[in-house]
Length: 252
Image 1 (cartoon, rainbow, N blue to C red):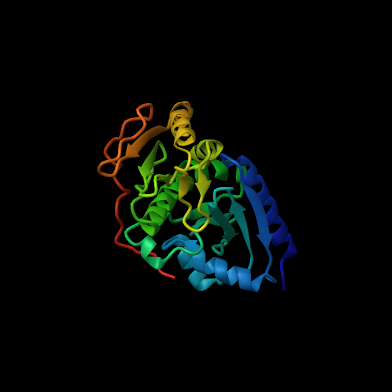
Image 2: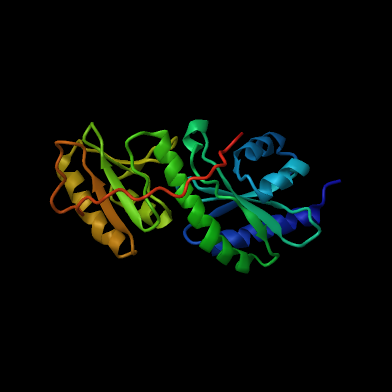
């Protein structure tokens, strides 16, 4: 029999959590009747630790999903250890090949207390940081030639067609890029700035540097051989080191 009180607690808890996380998040509750969605969601949960162990013993019966405009998603689900609170985990992007996840450390989830305000602080300072970095890496792996960014650095890469591409980390960097003309590819999450109008492209590149710097985020520009970047753009630097590789690989 469905526990409606538990369902209401999960939905209410996640609504509060969404409002306390940095950036803009929305929450949606999925009851047992959403069987097809819950089955797909189980396959996309990006975890090889506590949450995976729980799902192996207790199939997903209900869940609440937190979504950010840039495509990032978290799932909040029941815990079955007799304690109050819930479990939280990252959700892998749709439509990326398994190969994109190879060599990327899984942003494993953890248990949350029954206090959503305290939990929001933990999620913000831990899971979201690891998740955003992992997202940038898998998106980089899914489309060759785009260097992964870091939470404190956006790496821009010239493309053969004259456009500029980047895989930003976090909602703040994403908002600056979108405001200056970058368009996100919904399949890969990569953001592109068209080179059809070179003057407009140069203006955008000049603008994003100071805007990102004001948020404590640096910029770097990767040049293919024979291509020179606009002089007003932040000079290129060595690409950031990828996150530590893990022996564990994502399986579906």
